[in-house]
Length: 196
Image (cartoon, rainbow, N blue to C red):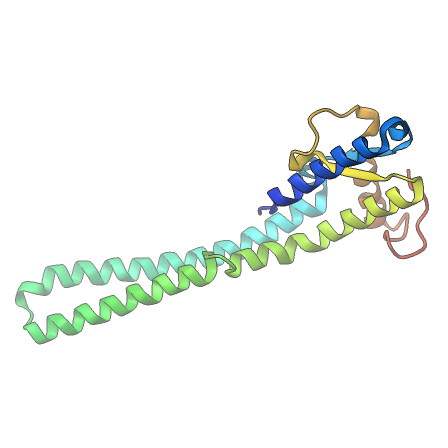
């Protein structure tokens, strides 16, 4: 599964940080910043692995269907090549048109599922969106409750250097796991504590 990153978002974040530091001048010491590493969160969070496995199962089914269609096309092409010298022109044209229709159907299937905005992209979004939303709520909750003005994502290339004491990744992972186990209510529910 792929997470989509917007370069526009990276540029805007960098511009915002530059303006923030430039505009605050000597008050920049009062700005509270932190960061997370969403790639690490996705790599270490168990629910992401579960979502990846479910996604892979669905993609494998679509891949099998595509392989079956391709196999039928190849089989029909070989048969047409072998029988072509013996077929009448009308029968050869009929078989060629049938083959072309199968190829067209196969290409439409591939485009519908693997093309831009296709089923694979939608499945990816379906499996990842709930996890991404939870991470965003937890980060917003930490940011609001602890007075951070800005929390960046190192995975998006916004962080060139970051003091490890500013890294909230372990806390986000811990909160995700605590929510899953029922130790704390979900972020954004209005009942959260400051967290670990």
